[in-house]
Length: 225
Length: 225
Image (tube, rainbow over all chains, first blue to last red; front, side):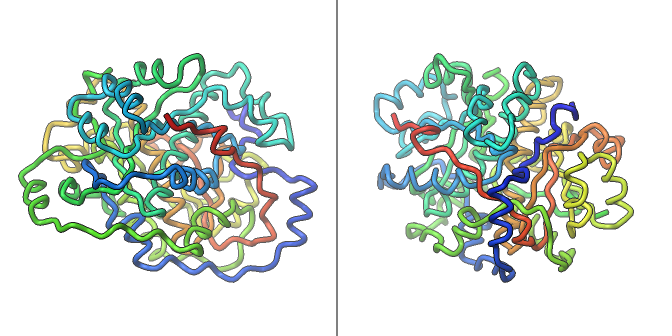
């Protein structure tokens, strides 16, 4: 499918605005690595939570998470992720029958459950999101490319979402064990949005964390050539 | 496919070790949000780079990126991502014919190009990675579940990789425009590993950055119910 991917990179192509910015940009210093405390919050001491302290999560915080997560890179800036924050009792009751039994209690008790989906009609937004060229035309009629692009980039944005939430002091509890079709019918009707995964967010109860599972060593998962 | 997902959550199920840890865990303070400088490095001022300053990226830094990225959550700790860091001139020459023309120069000049792939045989590692139960059996013979799980979680890990690189002071230039089949044949032969995307890493030249493309507002991409 290389023909369909001709300009399909994560970075924008040259534009007049880009060239102006290039001339104006100044040589930056090498970026300083984050301190140990920040690396712990994001990666090393962060855990998946199964229970929550009482504090609610404000609408302002939910919006602040998005305002960070949306900045992460997607190919051709396609930004396919769509999120429903399930917060109210009524909405949680609609989510409940979609969940596996062992995921019900931690989801109903979470201050918010983000339904992370991706829009298979994402390419209709490309004239706004990637205005330099007719990127929409790369996708129209190419279902495999549409599905792969939405799933890949929607998942990347789901990860940006979780790390943005952690960066703002929230804890996450992502879940794959649910009935995708039923969630789609309940929360994304009359659209081409498909659910990807759920993520409970809130302020986690450390007593709800299980033992850390092992991770793969560098030599098992990576090599240098 | 809900039957196949019965225990397929991102969090581990209860184990003796988990219960011991639960008893020993102490009530933590609310996590402090990261400071503005860190949020800028990760999200707000981070950009995709098309050119690089001269500094190489040491093997120690490449390993440190993995040691952060590997900590991010995957469903049932399945950890399907596999990464080849293409660094040497010889390896770059093997990558070159897989690239679209406009991606060649920035890739050949990058200190390292990470080929981000996912292993469709990931479930053979589950007895080690998720030892509490026979999670391998959930996947054997279910190709759609295998492919979706590998693609979703491999993409999540690809995002963790990019944010981990940024957290350590590196810059990223992710690329989707390449011949996946040819990369697979060249870098993942005799395996079930499939390439997902490429990511140039190094210390970015700010003159190589194009104008920021627009992002979707909260109300366009999200709603609260």
